[in-house]
Length: 125
Image (tube, rainbow, N blue to C red; front, side, top):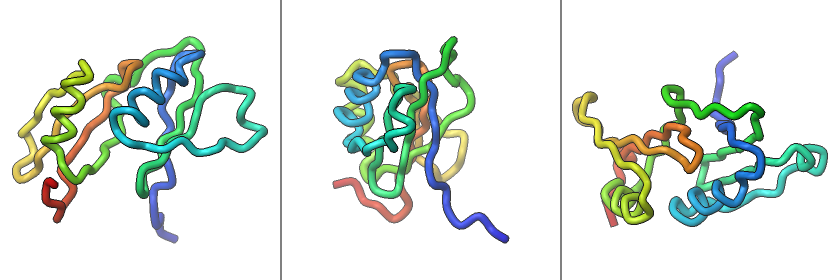
């Protein structure tokens, strides 16, 4: 048996942080919100999607951001995204430790670490 795909990544957020998650993931990154199953709505959080990337947010009490563990999102235009995040006062920390890989790290509004890489074969638009 082999794993054939990664369905989603779950990140933690503090209680009541849905609007901040939307502002970052929908507003800055272009994700769209998905409807959560009714049975899961009472616990807060939200589900987001962009292409094949699914990110779920769950409320964690007490909340502690993930500072080392992180998702890595491949994007078509890394420089454009870096400029957009910088303009939105979000951190952009370039990292060149992997030869041939253009990438940077940022954080969501809650301090969870997120890596962004230039998608293979994609040309910036």
